[in-house]
Image (cartoon, rainbow, N blue to C red; front, side, top):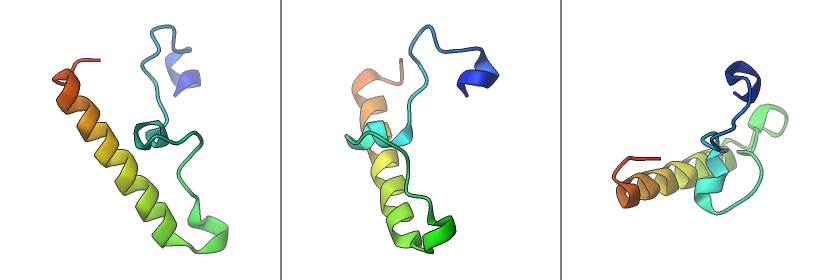
Length: 60
């Protein structure tokens, strides 16, 4: 996204896991086949994002 958008001077681009309170990326099941961990990461990130949107009224 940073490359596509030409950077992020306004600080609006975030990794999904930041909303789950973790640094890093969603677990990649490509080599491990561990889709359960990827699902949990995505679910936690989406729940955190939804909570953030509710707190800010959707404004970033």
